[in-house]
Length: 320
Image (cartoon, rainbow, N blue to C red; front, side, top):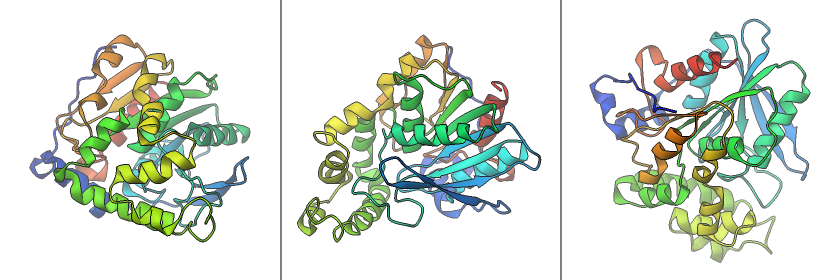
């Protein structure tokens, strides 16, 4: 599929990647969105909380929203997406991954970039409601990688799944990690590590045979976290094994449902391998938009309706 021509050209301050990233993550406000929480009990005894918001009129379309690393259903990029989806006649289900809804999850494991079994549980739950003829998935960053991996895995996708969108997707997890460990991204990486370590520390009391205070104290970087916790808690040999097996890049050639990736060229989190030009050109179902601007999960636009949000409406409506 030819690469998607982008028309995104924000006003001057938001041409700078870090400004777009920081403003959109820390200062954007989305008002007048009402969410209702539902707890989804999982087969392994754990749970995820789903934050629903609804269109004004009954609809047969629902969009599953997947947040990024250490995000949740109340982050502005999630609530902004939910609001515009509701305004355009679609219900929105904002997924809080395990341990991300304000309450520690029950198991030693939590969430990670490739945990498509959890996404599949959400899809099956929504379809069990028997009210939606069309469902869509929109994932951001880590959640985008999960969405694209899910779409390209060797699984039978439900016919109700009509389209998928990934925004600021680290298609190659190791490539993205190497960017995050660079000095230019120190503040972001430090913030992620701080939140991840705080959550892991809460598990010390409940799982003393699986993690120790000494283990936690060894975590100095995001790679350390994946080496000491993510890989071991989720069945991978080590951090590199986790990155290799869970990167969505290898699954893109097998995607058979209309799928769009929106990755900004000035996204400081993404390495060269995170821009799958070759895969998009060779797969008629894969659309790749690479705006010059946008930062990481940024894409500011006029009226507090972001470029990725308006693009998602057009893409989903074209595939109902």
